[in-house]
Image (cartoon, rainbow, N blue to C red; front, side, top):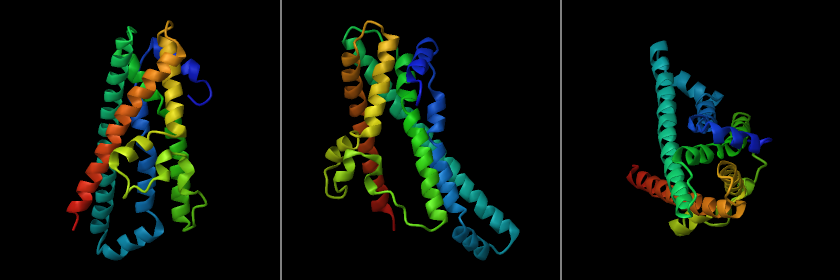
Length: 225
């Protein structure tokens, strides 16, 4: 997907599949949070609090259980967002009299995540290294080149912030990849039409997903002691 996206899309055209990117999407956050739990300061705290080997093993087991539950929740959330995006995209293309199957739509939307996931993996490893070495990160907040960094999340309406979060380098990358895939699966569709349908579908579902995540985070924060 990074170097030969057309070849990957042609392969997906003949054999649509989608599960691998969903599993891969949880790797960066799993590595980052597991690394944070087992950095020297956290380990020393566990060793001080653990009265015995059994209690220490219980603490470590609880940490891994938390990570696994988080991964499971992330997979479910990502799968739901991808299914909705694929359904909307397939519906938009059929409204334009272009029969894009849901399987192909899901495969294209899913694999368009891969470049961002790989770069996110590099970023997570970098952040973990900075945290373990107790260094100041030289990367600015706008490293991801996303329009949402220009808004104050606490003072911006959730709808505006959610839409802004869908505008940036990585969303544009996804739009181009999915549009390319549609033109390969449906040879009669122009790239302009494919790109328009892709932007409409992914921005809609991405904004709804971001809004739901924001409201859920606020609900959790309001119920914390």
